Length: 322
Ligand code: HBI
Ligand code: FE
Image 1: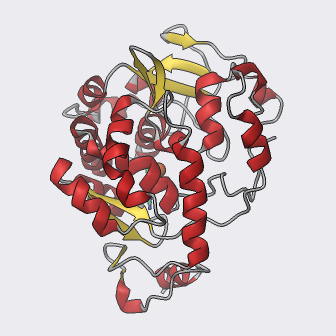
Image 2: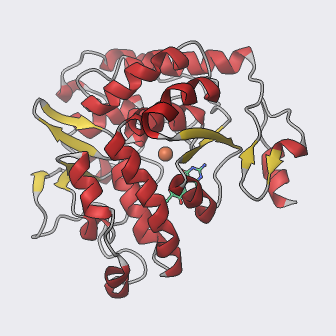
């Protein structure tokens, strides 16, 4: 069927048979055997991104990362090793899927504390490594921001590096673990109300691209940022994007950028507050009032926004991808 066709499309590593894929749950019964080249690609990504974390990732990410690092540093992780650490901490497990899975299946796994992680690793060449080296230790105003297609460090779609390095450390945090499970539960209702796009924007601007204000300064918790060295710098240091205090109702009305740096980042004060703002809240009445689709552009600043820093939008107006 269609699913098997998509599954068979993966070039490397997927030497599994049809019996290893469940079309109901979209789960692979096991991870594929990875080639040495794939393990090498992981180590390249891992060693580079690990150096980006101190002073930039939020304290809860660093705590979760420290607990998991032993299972992640020597190549593509075995999910059994990750789960041996993760499951006792928050009841979550990482489970392998062949690629992007349908929304309803994705939400159902989250609700049941299973994080579906792409079992494949991205391709591409590390061709902007030179630019990245020059950026290391450079003052914020001298950092070169660019996104290059076919770059190993540029995320094309959620692969194992994004899903595991970016998402799993935060699942070690009890409040955040509850937040994502609650998000999965809310997904079903969003689909029933035909407001999935609006609901998806919450995930996008928190789980994927969220910033948090800590006592020491602005820090990152979003997995989309923390699995990208370039956006790690851009999100914290660039003058271009807006940084706005998170307001869930506002976020649900806001468009987002899929394949380049964000034009706006939303900032939270704590994961407890984030959990409170969403969990247990009945979005039904809000959905009734929400227009289908988005009201606000990615670059919008509203009178009602609590602005952390207003951006120049220079990156956007220069055409984005460098
Ligand atoms: N599938 N594997 C995978 N990973 C995701 O992040 C994902 C998905 N399917 C749907 C989906 N995300 C969206 O529903 C959410 O981003 C809102
Ligand atoms: Fe993600």
